[in-house]
Image (cartoon, rainbow over all chains, first blue to last red):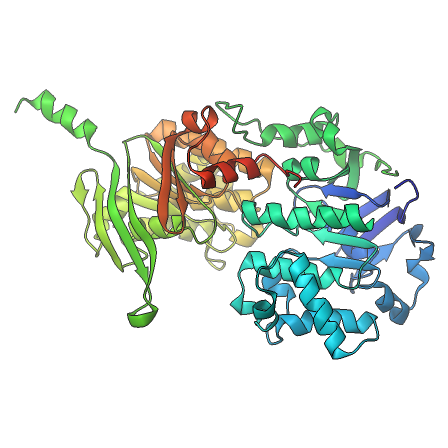
Length: 286
Length: 263
């Protein structure tokens, strides 16, 4: 846990258009060990762009710049596109928010999972099928054979998300980037999906970057939390100390949430201070 | 009967009462019953929450009340009068709905002015200028937003417009379908505060559908928990907070809303 798996320094993501340049991520530095790290922030804070930038998934007119993106001793910026493909999926996986848009609609679920395995491991089709079925079982799908032969539209949202996770985990990545993996799910299904990911971090020593807008969830699920605002890191802390957060933005977010146990007449409204945009980004190293 | 007795009796009549509502989708062999024997009532000025997961039928109940779904059986009483499968204009002056996704519920090529004027034109109401301005002020946007298009507004501002539209005909009952689930928490707080203010100022009755227990606990007096098309439990928010809910499904929901629980 002490030796970082991923080190990022001064990461910037810019989008150029004819008239102006928008900076979505503005010089953030952090590292990830074999732990669960949460990145929280509201829409537009740059949290998803951070995840994509690590995997070099930002296309023109977007531009990624960093002093350092080091994954397990490999400088990701210096790799060719072909070398990068060997990293994506195999060493670092990305689970996206909505299974409806991330699974191939005309390919059977099982074949998609098997393909993810075969791309990275030389194996027979039979071997891939065996592994795919095992993986479906690992993500607690009750009837793996039936699901293996289903098309994505034939399964529910929660099932689809578990299939995505199975697909991302079958090459046994060292680092999983999960971008709002449970936001489209019902709370009870969400809980099961989180338990699966939690188990993988513990059993296999995988690193997890958990991107979410849900402070409650992140503080109860992760080890460390990074809070982003306007493309910068405004604060970082241990997850269980999030309630004692100091930055007015984090405090404002916490106060704006309704709580079942502590009723109030009116919710406090976040007053945004333009100063926050200008503050230097906080480093979130281990 | 004495006149004061009549007034008292009227006050006792619920704003919205639903008895044994069954809702169906599809036809023939594919006919599916999405809502089974749902009954509840909301007093005038009250706020009632329907919670449950996707597919539990909570939104279907709302859409049936608003007239968007026509294949239903049972009794829907608005202020003591049973409503028919066909709704008349007067119905829509009493009940309006706010939808979940403000990015989808506003016409992208109509100005805010046109969006807000439309219900007034349909109902032949006068003073359109003044009413549109007033509605924008009421939801905290101000008149400068009147001639903008939806793409020029943020999600929270759009939801304010959607709320303004629902209030144009001065209804008494608002049906709210996950009004904040597409919004960030800080914006959610603003919209929930706005809804609370409007309810108090205009003496509105709310029927709120959501999957977020904390939002219901904040907004409502009573809640009904739905699962697979049926109401499994009805309780006051106080009861939910203090006593353990009885139904295991409610307990599961409540636990999950507190955050992650390791296995």
